[in-house]
Image (spheres, helix red, strand yellow):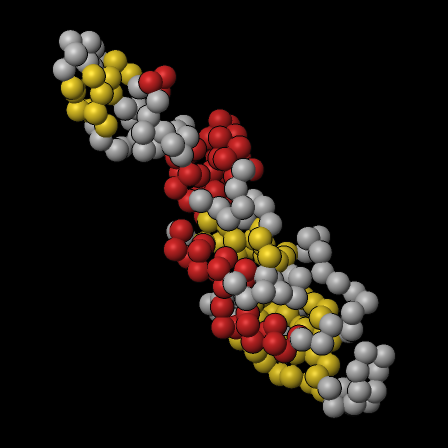
Length: 202
């Protein structure tokens, strides 16, 4: 038993929630399940009362305390992800299992517990400060699930659209008059030079 842990109240599904978390997140497991030795306001003797479990390495205790106390966004688990695939996997597991989408990378599971599925690229951008943080923050504010490619583009100073097709304003001009994409945008684009001939630029 962990010396210190987080206690989360559920109506009556603490064990189901713990097992879902253990199946969804790494470094997670269900421990001891304790049953009530006698009747109590929200249950009877023999009902599951508490469940020991770990979520992403964090020791927790699930308490079946009845419907009086519910979860809200004042508490959330933040799960760091390495790429879009990992972000999608956790997000889809939570939302697809009776959960609910929120905003800026937040969602709720079917029991009302809030989760922040946060790609490391976003955390790094905000920690960098300055214009990079401002651009990443602005991009994030319009998202539901975090779009890793869009955050990466914002860090470089490109909009998500510009990362694929730079606008005229975002292109530079070579001495020959051919338009070129900004260095942050790597897709090949085809433009028209001042002579009227098609020019392909990086």
